[in-house]
Amino acid sequence: MKLKTEYRVIYGDTDQMGVVYNANYLKMFERGRNEFFRQLNFSYRKLEKNHDILLPVVESYCKYLKGARYDDLLEIITEVVSLNPVKIKFEYEIRRESEIVAEGYTLHVFMKNNKIHRLDKDVYNNLKNLISNQK
Amino acid sequence: MKLKTEYRVIYGDTDQMGVVYNANYLKMFERGRNEFFRQLNFSYRKLEKNHDILLPVVESYCKYLKGARYDDLLEIITEVVSLNPVKIKFEYEIRRESEIVAEGYTLHVFMKNNKIHRLDKDVYNNLKNLISNQK
Amino acid sequence: MKLKTEYRVIYGDTDQMGVVYNANYLKMFERGRNEFFRQLNFSYRKLEKNHDILLPVVESYCKYLKGARYDDLLEIITEVVSLNPVKIKFEYEIRRESEIVAEGYTLHVFMKNNKIHRLDKDVYNNLKNLISNQK
Amino acid sequence: MKLKTEYRVIYGDTDQMGVVYNANYLKMFERGRNEFFRQLNFSYRKLEKNHDILLPVVESYCKYLKGARYDDLLEIITEVVSLNPVKIKFEYEIRRESEIVAEGYTLHVFMKNNKIHRLDKDVYNNLKNLISNQK
Image 1 (tube, rainbow over the protein chains, first blue to last red):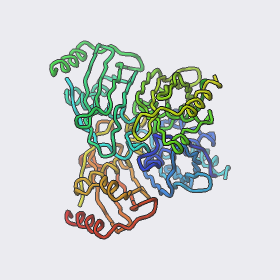
Image 2 (image 1 turned 135 degrees about the vertical axis):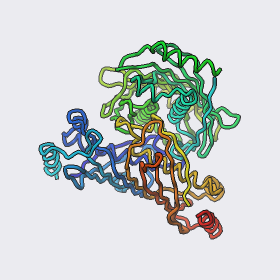
Image 3 (image 1 turned 90 degrees about the horizontal axis):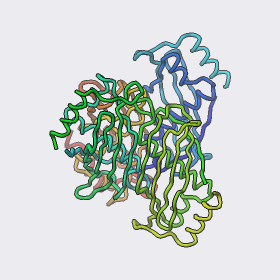
Image 4 (image 1 turned 120 degrees about the vertical axis):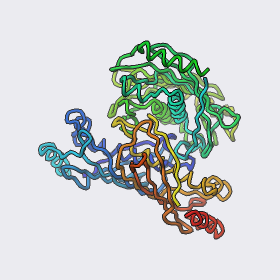
């Protein structure tokens, strides 16, 4: 399942080269995965609040293909490409109409009390089903 | 007492006008007041950790006079202009050699458990003396 | 005329106090005025591209009333409160449902070739009418 | 040659997990490579100004090992791991005392007039010698 969300570039996202600054694509990736969870109706906020589970990024990669510019309306396309009870990997495409502006991935671990956490079977299955059902 | 610290501008601070983006001066203001506390040997981090006291910004003001540019080595000059047991106000100047690039202030309240907090007499006096002694 | 746009808070906007970092409200103000121009059908991008006119911020002020939190859907309400051929002032309210989270203003000058620029009569009248008509 | 520079974490770098937000490490990487050029006495700013050559990031990778925290004094260690007349690759380590907090790389191409640019022999040799001499 690929989920889409939009993002409008502001001045504050650009740098003096006139394009979006490299680090700011990682913020778009975050926006993509937040929206991903929301569209699944699986609130990451609830995971945090009710289960004290955090999902920090352990790796990020981004390939910059075209410079996104001020006022561009970008599309952030997000997909889960692997999931197990301790890790989840997302892939992203940032598009401006038909062009891919940037693409990349983030790898995350589930954490609880500062330790890597294995998701409970029900939470894991719930998440897994939600993702598969929509494929 | 005016305390000084330096900051080197990176690409990520600029926007497509070729100068530092307006919001990023507020980050320099924060850098100034952190260094202010450190040079007083009054650790804000300790205030947070040992007393659970936070110091959120309740007002900020910035006047942008010159555009700071990539690679500029700026000087952040910080001063406490008023202090009472519940509030503290800082003023800042951002300089590039003899020019003032930006100036402004931030107003803060002491907070504990999500409520405005009146500093204990000893903490307050300690802070007040530290600031006055150095004038 | 007050124009509204929405913004969803990401992790990257928050700081360790658990609320949106003070400087990031200025980015929302920018988002508000960009959208303001877009809804007027007066493209700021065109002003830049066709007329080489820039609109840098010369003053910003923000009052922080409530902490906006991760995943909050905020409403940015933007209004022009004064306009003349060299300056424009915007006021902003950031709302979360019925609460005002932050409010402030930015003051801008029209600039061309690094100098303050007086808008041509037609551009100025066009902009002024657009703003008034919608009141 | 590995070059070191320091960076003090501010509140604005952290997120509500209480650690530095993932995208902000890429800004430290930039700070590392700027300082790298400066210590070589090879000004990137001059490359831009005198030769109109830009050095955009085409790939970035970061592995997050420990969470850097507010007020941490980090060491950014930067190294060129490959160089040819069109590309340059940097590797980075972000350290807090003896611990590696994050590590990663960025890949860059030389660009002129929006096209990939092959460095002139003298500029290239100059850069190459500077890097090798210091190994």
